Structures are given as structure tokens and as C-alpha cells.
Image (cartoon, rainbow, N blue to C red):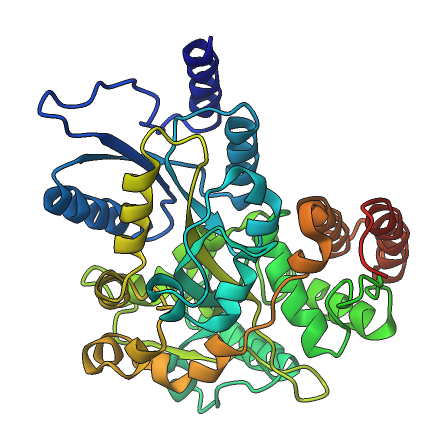
Length: 433
């Protein structure tokens, strides 16, 4: 019965993502080697580096590993995990989980140690705290993230423009260079690309706008809904004005890779994205190689620059057939040697402080040192307050923001309605008050 249920869920996984490879029920090797399955995303070099790291572990351990490709959309990936784990399926042993998911998935995850042991103590304490639910460390940090601003160094130099320090300066500079480049023959040039699709990435972008305007973070640390305020409304109105002017109308369908595609092809002046895009922009075949700079995100009217905390962890399913081996794989992949390799090859930010002073890491990613404070002081999403209700809270938020960006609702109306809906959600979920 369990096998049949697992196979049904595999078919569901395939329906969500045709490239999923982990549903084949391959037997273990005859020499006693076990098969451990790990899920990985495929944004940028993510899938390649995951596979390489997992294969290194397999060669050293004498066991086998299979990499399961999961949806790039964080929303779809979480839904897939919840369906698999909710049924107790053993299709995936090691799960790649977003920084906001430990509280949502904790009941299905094994404890990986403690904050003070060798595995936990080497990482940034704030992330270990984030991954500790009811005293259980349920995920180990793999890489951290914070939103950053990419810009065309050559174009800013050409038009004698400084790196914008505020959102207003970004809009002005983006419009000026966009218009001049179009007049010079590049009709496809846009000023600014970002993640505008209605999904978790939009939550990250919108939180950066709102918080930089002094508008808070949806709900405060006590669980009080704070999103309906004048500064939050002003931030969304400003962002909505970008669509169709300095940002293409299609930005409302952009996730990370769509934004990177436009910027890396040479058709955008500025881009908001995560650090992973650096190594790709600097690739041998990149049209903008050696012409890209990275800076902290612009500040709001009050002078505050805010970057949303991102990043991914590795966790072990409590339904794994090989829990000890799965934990061993997680500890290997989240260790200093593997994090250094990933930082150099793919610009994935380590969660181990000492790597930010490593000469080889800094040679590959100069901005790691320059933006160290941005990465270590990034603003978390309100997942610890919302707990298991975070996904619904975020969905309500990004839907409201999307309606403003698309012109379907005013910022005032959208945030007032959102606040009412979140009050019901937060209070109904028994959040702290």
C-alpha cells in the first residue's frame, strides 16, 4: 500500500515538473550500497553544482545518490513537498528548503543536531536560530541570500551617472539611459528589471520596497498586522509607476531567470536579483561579461536600504529509508569545503563567516566583502511569527501587491483589503498578540 501511494505521488510530481527524475524505484546496488535521493532546484548553476557535490559524497561514501529536479517556483516546490510529506512518501530523502519553510515543514523533518555542535556552530547564528523549531535543529544552512542591485558599469560611465542610492534616483537614471540607448538604436533597452510575477519572489521584492520606505514588514514581531500604512502605500505606488515606463509590462511575469535573461542579454540598465546571477553574468558566453557591477539595493526616502533575507537549507525527511546516510550527505554538502566550492563556481553566498575572508572566494566574488553587512543583516520575512500560516500570508500579500502593479486596484484599497484578510488569518492561526 505504501509503495502504491508513493508511486501515485511520483506521478503527481511528474505532472508538476516533467523533468523530475526521482520517481524511478531503482534497487540498491548489489554490493550493499544504498540509494539516497536529494531534491535540487535549477536556477542558474544550482542543479549542476548540487549534482556535482552529491556525486562527490557518493564517491567518498561508497553509496549512490540520485538528484531529483523540483520546480524552480518556490510556491510550486513547497506544494509538492507538502503533498509528498503529508502522505509519508519516501521518494526524497534530502530536501532543499527555503529559509521560510522550517516552521511549515518541521513536523516532517528529522533533527540534525544542535546549534552548538560541530555542524551547527560553524554557521551564522541567526540562520541556525531560524532553522531551530521547538528546540529541534531541522535544517542546516546551505547558502544564504539577500537581494542586490546589478548595474551596467559601462552604461553608467558612458552617461556619467553614479550608482543610484535611492529608488527615486534609480528611476531617474534608468529612464535617462533607457531613452538615450533607444534613440541610439537599441529599441529593446529597459531601465530596470526585477521579479514581478505573483509568487514568493514578489513578496521579497515588495518587502524591500516597503521596508525601505519605513512601512514595516507586513506583520510585526508580536503578530500585529501593520501593512496598511501610508509609507507602504507610497512604496507600492512608486513601484507601480515603473511598469511600462522603465520596466517592461512583461515584468509582471518575471521570476529570477526571466529578469536575468533580459539583463544578461544586454537589454537592461539595472536588475534586482540574488547573488547567484553574478557568476552567470561573468560567464565566458555572457554579452555583459566584465561590464556588470553589484551594489546594495537603493534606499527609500528615509535613507534606509533593505534587502530581504533569502537562502536555502538542506533537511532530511523523517520518512527517509536511509536517515543516517541522508544526514551524512547534508553535513557534507553544508560543510566549509563544499560551500567554498559553490561560492567560487556559482556565487552562492556561504553561511560560514570565515569564507567571507577567503582570498579565493573574494577573487571570484569581489562584492562578497563589500556587501558583507548586507548579507549578514538582511531583513527576514515574517515566517517565524506566521509559522505554518506563512505560505498563506505571503500568498495574500503578493496577490495584493500584484493587483496594484497591474493597475487592478489602488494601493490604498489593496492594502486595506489585505489587512482585513490578514487579521482573520493571523488571529485564526493563533498567532502571538
